[in-house]
Length: 420
Image (cartoon, rainbow, N blue to C red; front, side, top):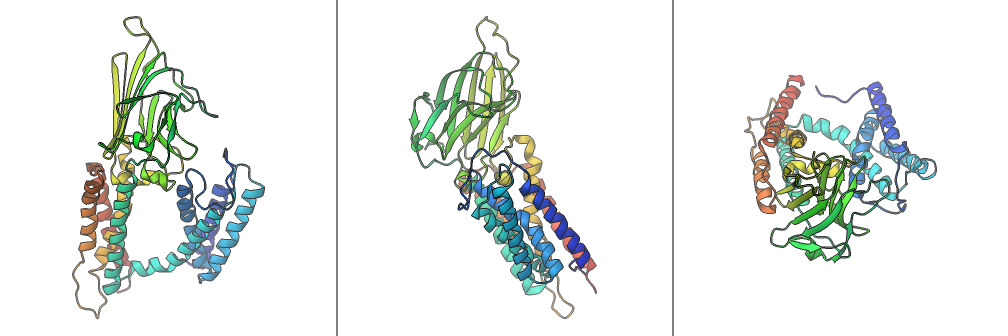
């Protein structure tokens, strides 16, 4: 029988998670900007911070509900804990800011955890009509997540004109050492003095961004990121082409940026060969082509007759990267993370689908309700077709199969543990 933990285990779990929260929220940070206390989605990645703050406090709410046995007291304790953390961040912790958004997100996370502490136990043992309702709900949720993911990953126009930043110098960043000769955006040249409209930044024919860059000079590896060319304002970024080490990085504006989520950055490793001279004695010449369209991001660099390239397909499995708090760069080798994300999305649907066939001893036999699971699988094909994103690859479909198998296995495990 699946039951909630005892008081000692619940107390240990709540105390452990409180320590995790303290470590994550009270560690000094190097934040260059000071944010107003009244904001909800604060900073460039305010959406990411809001979602992760909710997730961070869900286990704390779980432990408090298991320990205290009701939902009101955990909510009060969670709110008091949040208020204490925000006061410390405001007055004592360097680089940290207190905000209304953090208070709201932490309170929501605690309430969700307190609710899930009881709800999950009901879901695990659901049979009959309850299992069928839950399967419908989770099937619709999973289909909606897949559809929204395919939409958020798409290139999207900015709201305002942007300035061209030609080898910009930024604090805590290196300066690009090559000589930038020419830049083309969507087939037309741009210069360091241009101000580009939103229509100019996104090609209406391809619904994407195409950048071509010509560089002269030896380009040694950098220790930190160095911008090559960028279009941006104080609030938005159109595209950014940069160097880190010997890698070339490229990102463009997406719909996710409107919600202050992470923007996908593709990395071309070993893009710049060892510094030297061309065979004809002239200075090194590099030609970079970077393209961001609904189905993929492609970056190539040709230098001294040596060409390197990378292509990152925009699939629904990439949605996990929109919620990462760290500045990461992606390539095709990240497909296991995409597969893991899709597996996690399919596990509850597969579990509840199997539960629809379970019944109590006095209930009539029931058939498995397949349509919510079929809806999710169809959405994985239909959503990319509608939005222009790429279809999931073989590795990502492997993650789907693992999620289906794991959900069915978990359901059998729960059933075998139940009293007969």
